[in-house]
Length: 223
Image (cartoon, rainbow, N blue to C red; front, side):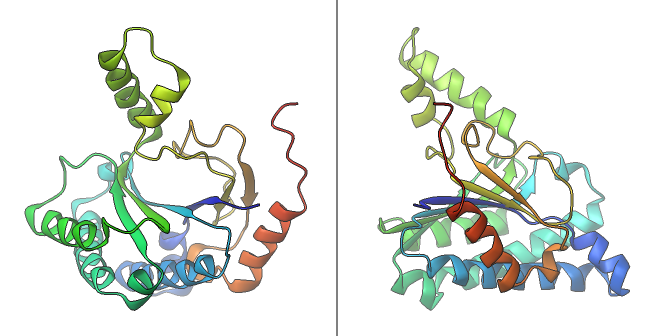
């Protein structure tokens, strides 16, 4: 049963070059695709947690102009999500997970608005990994666990992660077959689905193929 899913939406910049549209237009299409995929996820009854890789710690080294475009779009879409009918009708708690020291004040206010309006929901969780790195997540979880107990358990470390749930399935678009520092702890026994489609090209048919791949996989967890 599919309880949790992780998504690495790769290929926006390549889509811009492939189609000849501006990088801004490609990112807009990428944000629209994320909203579309979110709707598909909501139609899977067993799915309780979805985590999408929005911006990695490595992405923060990109050109200032490109980061500016992304920050502007995140601000717009977070404010839209705060009042989105699908969020509230499905009782989805939205969490922004990652390092926040790079986030400008306006975007931080949008994050606080979004998280504040959904914090009381418990049915489903949407994690948006922003300024996120799996190694940094592990480092911080280890530190917190050791502060709580000099001899911490695996469960204590897991409880201190940004995303405390294991991930059943990870989908990555854009042809590359790697995790790129995404959910390193949670992906220990994840099924991995890689597609050559660039993120804006990712369609329902390919999404369904990923879900079918998961449903047809015998998961033994090393046993």
